[in-house]
Length: 185
Image 1 (cartoon, helix red, strand yellow):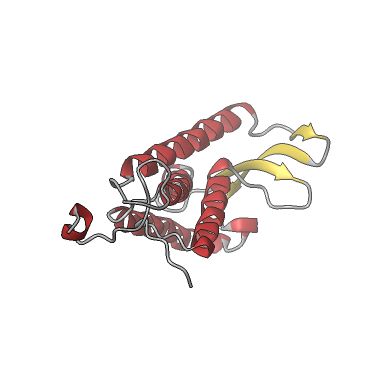
Image 2 (cartoon, helix red, strand yellow; image 1 turned 135 degrees about the vertical axis):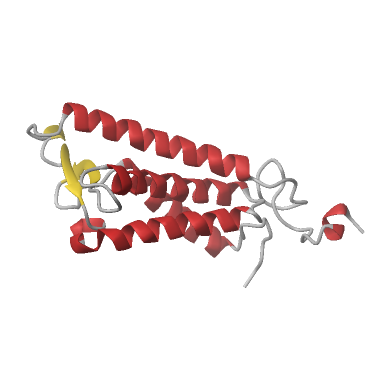
């Protein structure tokens, strides 16, 4: 009996190198936390800069009117939906963080660690705004500033969440589970 079988873990799954095939190796919490910290800090620094330099100023055109930097405070969800439900979105972000923490206990896949790290960093980024930005106390407005033409204004935390979610969909379709096992349906 292998060490993995004795520990009650499946023997197929992620390798230490690539997260796919072979024995699983060790948990990937460090990768998850590293990606989450990078996404969170990038979001936080970008928001601090745009609030300090761009808020209460005219939008800055990056690619004509197709892409601009324009600071708004969004108390709702995507596209400004549900502005009266800020506390609900705060609770949802906290629930996502708790769910990721629970999944992390069985995380042996590097791709899943990256995906969940993006979700975690993005959720923390927007949760920080909801907790600490005016008016505070779970009702703060999220700082959004990337303004493509004919689309919602968003931030880097939103981008991390979308990219993490997209990666999770791809991993799920490929049959790779967070514990590193690969299944075929």
